Length: 186
Image 1: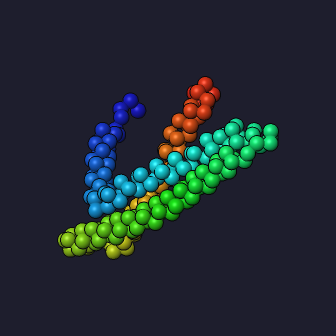
Image 2 (image 1 turned 90 degrees about the vertical axis):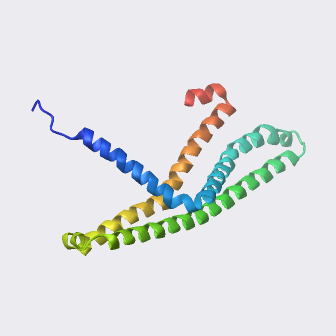
């Protein structure tokens, strides 16, 4: 068993070609929605900024707004912090709702166009192809592929973007709050 008989080189070249084709297909499907996708990217950033502002607001409330209350001072600063916290929660909720609504519409539009393209492709194939492949295999393959893309559009993209932004935002927040402790945690 000193001889390798695999085709890793061929497969990696083929895989790279498939990835570039898939990327080109995705970009062509998203092209009609490019302005909305850019707006949704901004909405996701705003949502994550609102979510990550909560620890800063809590810190501000504990460190600066509560001590005056203990000495008989005004509750004005605490009320301000609570109001800003409520505003941040409202911004987060509204932006999340907008993102889910618009991304869902885009996802359904992309899936509809993809199904149309697959159908047109199958209709252009010659009769010999349809003789070799049963209709069940064709339907099963197209259905499972479109379902996988639908799952990615519904949950995968949103989860990935939110996780990445939360990771970077939390890292920046940790370093901002306490440089030494934040760098140690990172």
